[in-house]
Length: 304
Image (tube, rainbow, N blue to C red; front, side, top):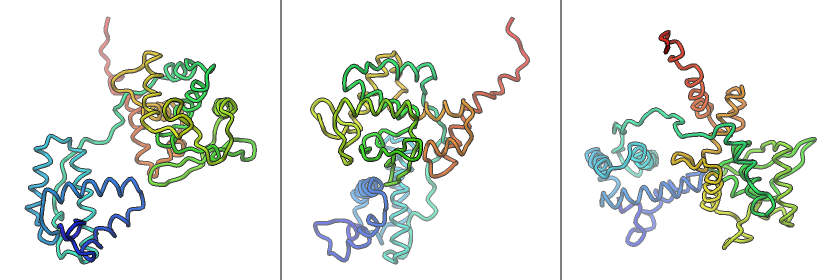
């Protein structure tokens, strides 16, 4: 397989299939992930793509399992390799697909098992932020967008001031999501008020400027996802909600779960979450319905 991927000794024509495969990925993050996973695979195999057999794939699968990786991680790695071999086969770069028939490890059915913030905790988190400082104003605006509009950490970091616009009688924000996906979301008046308070104190209105900037060593620069994670962690600690299962993405989970508890339907939740498939949103609805209508409520035994 070195004939497909290596860059130091391979001829240019040998690199074409691999390069085309990566260029065919529309998402930059996916391209980067696939590249890393495939190079690890090549290092293990140390042979040409056309010479890899089904038995080799079984050996690699066993190697991953013996490395102590979780099933979901192994499946992710094998799917990246499967995508490459499918592409190579379709492009007639190989005459057989060694991944054909390979059974992937079983993973548990997807559930939203992570802890979420209660409605009381969510409200306390927002109200606990001291807005007498610029940092406090910024943090309140960010936490509000995460808890009310279910923005992801990366979406908060990618936002620019110019993404906010007035449309008819409401404020709208252009959200730059995963895999270059964009969506316009409505911003509630109270959330916009928090954003406006922050921007007015900051004193910068350039449309192409980052909406949220760092305050310390990244002062004036776009916040990194790590900085957002630390900020949320510290804010959760302030209200005593820094449980091990809580993280920055918990705010998004909490937003969706609270929406469902308030009576939102599948379409409402899918729109808020900006999920491509309703099946992803159904994970949240199923979780809440199981708790609300748990069969334990049907047990006639009484505790006196």
